[in-house]
Image 1 (tube, helix red, strand yellow):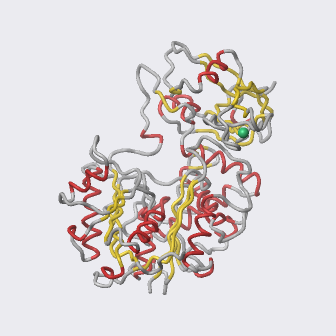
Image 2 (cartoon, chains in turn yellow, orange):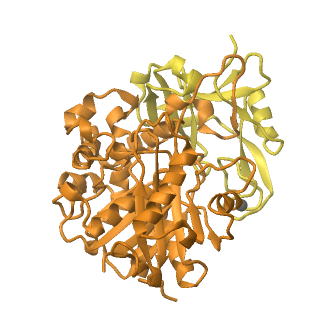
Image 3 (cartoon, protein in one colour):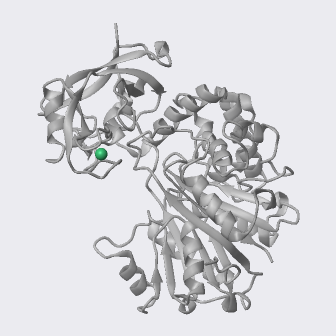
Length: 138
Length: 391
Ligand SMILES: [Zn+2]
């Protein structure tokens, strides 16, 4: 079945991130000068404005910082309601701590604050791209 | 350096019909609003030499807004064109007027036929749409989801309930009922129970926690003191104003997300009130960008009208309701009056009408000082504030 939900218009600058997802790694730019993490990726470190950032794989371990069960979705997402969008706090606590994503593999009614999560990967059929999702740790 | 207080005034305001306007275009609403506000001031288009289009105002494709509007309004050179978000844009226009860059400027916006909420996004038939690289849309999120996400966190951290949020929808609808031009007023009063039993859009936000999604246009004329004294209405003077920007477009949640010292809205408010020489207690009437019920609660905290975590108490104690200490969004706000896409200027218009004493059943008695807040990106990302006075 054709995937009809929005896909990212990926850039050359961030190719290592999307390449990482293909290899089932979630990579975050880490500043080579001051050591700070930067999420979402920016062209320079927010702390020291250095352009020397290194794509560094994180563990994929996270907890629920917040979540919303969506009952009215935009576009093709509306075929999947109710679904859960999560703000996941990564274990490494990269700035800005929180990664937005779909939460899959759980009944929306069972989500709780602080619940342990892990990054999972979804290959999009007919498209040369892998997306990240979050799933509960079983 | 002091802000040039009372050297510029709001002299004209106009709102088109708000609601479903299938026979109108965005352009025709913008033009009607510009003409209407200029007429309200007792001026003519030939007096206008500055334009303040709202950031999201569309115009003829392929021509910059400056040039399109300069030509459209009579093929005359215009002295000042400044895009922005209402409250801060007007503060900067007041400073520009005092500095002699322009004498009469018009802020305007109009939108028809395009929905802002999820109903406005149609699923494609054959190929996935592309969105910017870090857009929350790839995760099924949109603005309501984003506000819902941090609303839940806020409720968790500060012990605030859905019933607390609902109180905002209730008082704002009460104001809309008293405003004959509001979109939702004719539907009548609502209760906390009505809000809680309306369907979920994005938990914890119900339908009645969300702003409406309609067409409409509006305009505001700001002019020099000299021009203002000869206008049709009593001038509503600009005492001060400021803006502040912080985070990006729904990409990041900064840590801490709820700092005691606030973020953009606090910075803009502190600066605006400092320049205007007023305190929080001086405000008789307020208009605050209220895209969701949670937004009003956080606005009150960020603007410093109460402490962090006490916004819901402030609402429950009745301070925002007509008759309260600081009636807020007396037109019914974005929740129950109108949300036409880029509606930030509507809050300023209602405050101007209150300071003119022109609000009929919803008039705040003896309103002398009013404040309008524009905010975006979850109350944290950006904010701008305008302080106005009747005399
Ligand atoms: Zn750095």
